[in-house]
Length: 389
Image 1 (cartoon, helix red, strand yellow):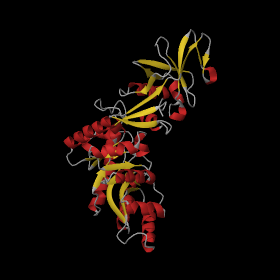
Image 2 (tube, rainbow, N blue to C red):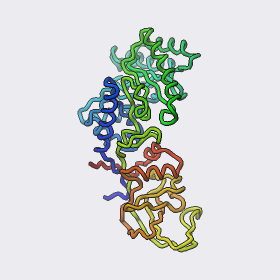
Image 3 (cartoon, one colour):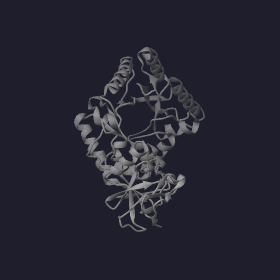
Image 4 (cartoon, rainbow, N blue to C red):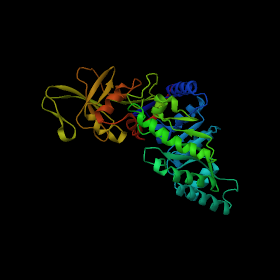
């Protein structure tokens, strides 16, 4: 069966990006290791394809958003007789028996962001030990999450809260069944501005870390830089740098970009139908576009159910051959229409929604008022991912 829509995943580009970034990081800070963020199915690229390729390129540390994603990464590597150095869950895992058992048995690292949450995990570990489900030495590895200014998850690092936070972390360190392996925070504005906000976040984070270390808490792994931080702030590299969007060949922003990255995903479709549009005729729902002349229109079998956003109508294009064809009218659930006047196209011809240059992805994101992160993560499961190179 030949699919009408395909997301080609260039694994050689993925490896290139990882090795390029790893080597740059190592040159700036030899002790710093890259952590590959593969949440959201490797940012829509397919964890099943990307994780083994990254492992082959030398990656050993991975980060995800949930226990389900962590289990998937563990299983992907285990099927190939590979063992991750660490799999870190960046988000919330309900402290229930099945989850805690999985965390302990697979040695998955959990982000812990409050004393209350740490106690809930500890209590469940002790309950499972009492039932004989976990051994006496089993417990949960964790990285403490400090909120340095994102105000999402984390121990408070505001100057007024430092004493309380340090006291809480010392209490976490004493909990049975909880092992603190690391500490981290997350930048809110690393991809924009002059870096003032990010440096202020680092100072808040670092102040709490140093106070905890002085009180006897050992953090084997410290990390704060995300993709944008990795590109812009080598002075803030620590034991790890979390590589997300940059692994997939896309820059976080115009202020945080790297021209040497190669986009990993190429999204393509095929022309289903070509027809003439007469002056005065309108296209798609709502009749928002009406022709002022005779035109040639191609119908493409991709729509918002595939992750091709309705917002792309506002000036978005697709690539036909080496030319760009603008979207006409509203994007439908399963189809869209584009202007192919004087392009000499036919039904069956391939069309790239975005290709390895990444330029059309930028145009689409600008049209929809969104970011490349969202555009690629929303490519739905209806679109088959196929490895190339």
